[in-house]
Image (cartoon, rainbow, N blue to C red; front, side, top):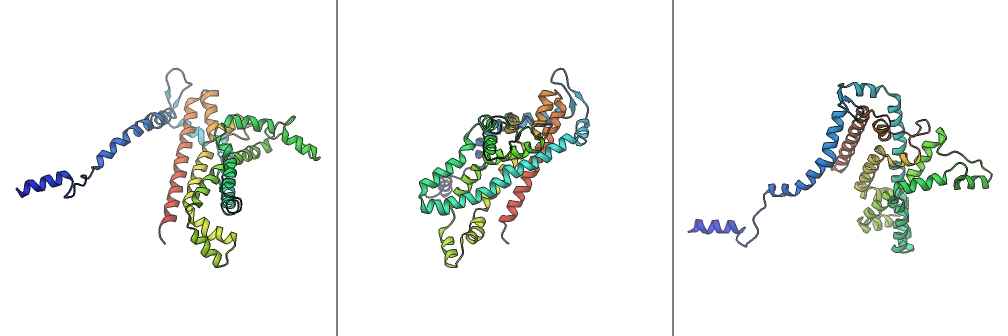
Length: 313
C-alpha cells in the first residue's frame, strides 16, 4: 500500500503537487526549427561552397575536380592579400573607431545630456546617431556618392568656397579607401552608442557616487567605473563590428565596385567578382571559404579573450 502511494506521489511530481522534472530531450524539440533553418540557409550552402572550391567550374556543365589548385593559386594571388590589407583599414573604420567614439558619445549622452537636459533629449540624440543604421545601404551609398562627386558634390563645393581645392574622393586611388572608411564610420557609429547607453543603465549609481566622494573627475570615473562595468558590451560591439568589417560588401558595391584599380577591393567583393563577373566559381568559392574560416577564427579568439577577462583573478 505504501509503495503504491509513493508511486502516485512521484507521478504527481512530489508531495505538494509540483510538476515532475522535464527531461532534457524535451528541449531539443524546440531546436529543430532553428536547426533546419540553419541547415538550409547556412550549412548546406557553405558545404556546397567548400566542395566547389576544389573544382574548376564556370557555372554551367559539370565541375572538374582539381583538388587544392584553387587554394595554391589563392595564396599566391597578390590581389587577394591586398584585399585583406584593405579589410584591416575597414576594421579600423567599422570596429575600432566607432567603439572608441561610441564609448565617449554614450558617456556624454548618459552623464551630461541626460542629467542636465533630460532623458528625452538624450534619447533624441541617440536616435539621430542610430539613424544611419536604419537607412538602406544602397540609399546611403547613393547619397554619399552625390556628396563626394568631384564636379558637383557638396563637399568639394564647401572646400572651394573656403579656397581649398576639390578632390576626386572615390576616384583617386590614394583617397578612395580613406573616403570609404570615413563613410563606414558614419554608418556604424550609432550601433555602439545604443549598446553602450543600454549598458550604462545597468551600472550601479552608487559606484559613481563613491567615486565622486573620493574626488574622481569625469575621466577617472569613465576609466575606473564605466569601462570595467560595461566590458561585456565592449566585447560584443568589437566582435560584431569586426565580423561586419570582414564580410562588408554592400557599401563597396554601391560606392566604388572595388575600384579605382582595386584600391577598395575586399575579400567578399573579390569573391563576388570571381563568381559572377569572371565565372570562376571554384576560385570564388575558395576565397569565400578562406574568408569564412578567418571569421570563425576571429570569433573564437574574441570569445576566448572575453572568457579570460571574466575569470576571477
